[in-house]
Image (cartoon, rainbow, N blue to C red; front, side, top):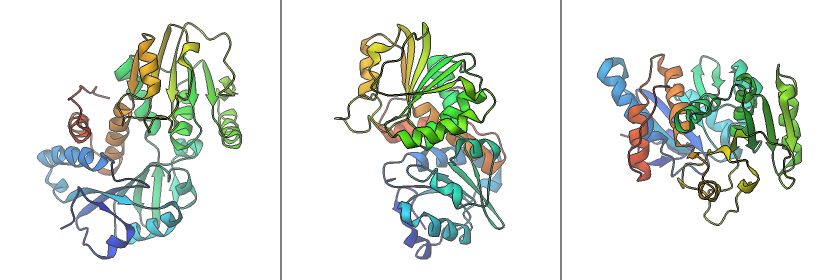
Length: 311
């Protein structure tokens, strides 16, 4: 019987029998992902309500980028009902799956795959997770707001599109790689309301920021303790808030510096939980309680329990 605490590889698909209704998260690296603990806790709650979830199990697989195409074919052949994709697979998978939801097409990235007869269909729940995380942790609504977004990878693309879909007043997007940033800005420009988005250089301060807004970090800067902060928070007005998608470590240098200034801050754990809950809703076609997911995630990370909204 496969172990949900273990980190598997694609080769293990032929060595173990992943019976029943199998789900998995794919990433590289992936060993420290809390998704299995989180999803299996939610599945246990679903089992208590409906016996059809008795054979559902969620696993973790380390898949290198160069192996993703073959891996998706094998997961499909082994009838894995659903897959979550994390770094670095969200953008690459767009060219490897059968169909993509309209919002994921705009985002240019997928994080949730659903088995279909001829391949996987792709969805993106990151934007939803971000929206819920901002609302829950910071009491912040994107509609009519000013947002500074750092990054242009898969998570940043989802965040940027969500900001436009939510009718934010102004969206500033900054990234170290000019070509990736330009590609994201082209996507936003083609959207209704995308004219409110503007690219900026990370080393050039933004002028005339309004009194309130939110800074969102969607870069990987902060994952390591010696990473420099991706933005100088001293440039933010006193009424701003700071959200870092990184949840481990729970307090990045960016969040520490923002807190020292007295700015409200939050990490990405709530985003992780809510995007995961939405993914499980897509697979199960049932409402999913986010409370056991948050409890399991906090336990896996060695963090004290924290509340979670209803979504």
